[in-house]
Length: 248
Image (cartoon, rainbow, N blue to C red; front, top):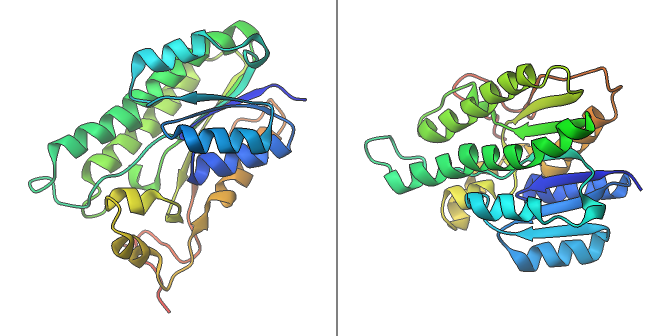
């Protein structure tokens, strides 16, 4: 059995896919998410899993959960800051300020909470790998991307600066920035409107959660002296010209 991988936002999409692939590869798991029923079901299926049913935005809950980890799950080798979301596509002057704050609290502050809580374990062991899930929206703007894109630009820059701060600690840091991927992402962005969510993917190819999970595993299995600083990945049908998608 390998050391432990800690995955936030583990109840669906990229997080769930990464949990499955890392479990299959022999890692113990810590899975954090808000939906306890899903966490329990996944843990029962994968085994060797400790769950944290809390909101990544709750600073005290995150730190308390890490502080109270069972001894057998304190050997955290991998942290995957995956929890994140987008809400709405309205222009700034029309969008909800509450939605802006939820994105900031989740995508930025939640990532910081998990990182700060886990880093002492990694620095003490002088070993580790941190993945921060960004987005192509952090590099390439699009109409309605406003605050979501800004939070993901933070993820990119924080990842670069974190690498600088961790020099000498033998801890790798990689920002992974996916393009269009079919998960629950659009369903959350459109607040449960399945018709609008499905329309995003109609007639085009897209990334799948397991594509990103495989990339994470490939990075982990590189020699430890190799660090991928940032990895931007799109489906072949997506390009930069206004995020144009080929349609059949």
